[in-house]
Length: 113
Image (cartoon, rainbow, N blue to C red; front, side):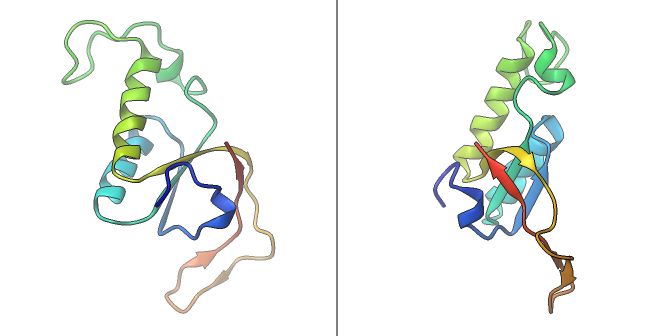
């Protein structure tokens, strides 16, 4: 899968809402499991970690690291396994969601880079 592909041109196995530490970690695991993965995110500096000046207590990270740098590393790792990231513009069903044969609900998500 092409990284950061146009989300409207792709059907994803997994769509993760939020690109912070939890969302990016989930993207790493789902992409490694060969599931096509899209992370819909407001941006690197939208959450608490992205706004943090310096972090000194993040596991596996010696010394201090800016929050944006840590999020960038997480995002790059997920992208390395094939996850795509898109900035969100709106998120609403194009028509009332209906269950598919598998029981999953399908809805359209409009997202932009």
